[in-house]
Length: 310
View 1 (cartoon, rainbow, N blue to C red):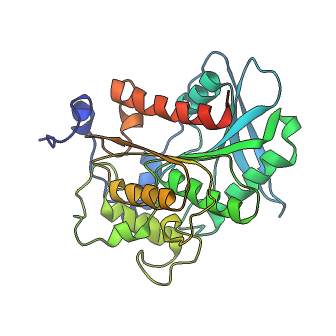
View 2 (cartoon, one colour; view 1 turned 90 degrees about the vertical axis):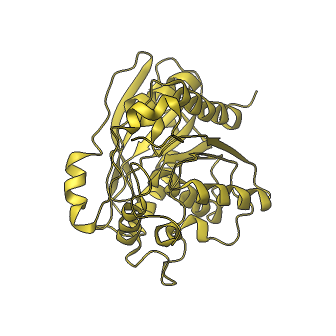
């Protein structure tokens, strides 16, 4: 029986979506079963796989989406994939091609190191390296180093928020942050008022596993490393304009609304899109529905407003 609160357009897919309960022992299995690349050619968009070199001598695999017809330096979206910090693929051709083709921007999708093999700050260090790579030689890809937004979905949205904070502190701010049902607060994983399997696709049990793997300590602990959890930052002033989108039936609903309120209180321009009856990842699970299209179109409109003014 599907929860009657689920939006009518999502009920069919909700019947097929489990409430995943990922435990540390099952991370390897879940990686093999899920997080596969989503591939598909899109007319009018060029796709390039390359390596973003790091100052330490290492490199980060990236997939770059470029509009086939372009003139002048392009604005860029550095996109960060989801997967609970423990899985996922940076190859999502429909999403990357949508933003590149519709908006005429470059999309750089990054493959960061995953926990628990690589706990904090490995993933964030990789993403900093990609941001630096974009700005170090923008002419190579025809990019505008002053118009670089960061964005991501789920865990990628949380990493995008953390990356925005680090770029601000380094005086190399992002142009904007696009946070799609972001994983922002480890304390959600230890809330007493949420059941362990209460939410579809990504529940509190999985959230605990993901945060513990990434942080190297239990979620909610006072030993959480500074800078690892976006919602734990006390001063949000001066951060880049934000768009936050989340469904009412998403585990991350409350933390997303709280972060949006705090951004606004700090004087940061923040657009909040709350989708009634939507579960976690609904836009990927039911991408052909009107509710998913409207959600994705709202993201495009935000990016257009901040990256392509006028």
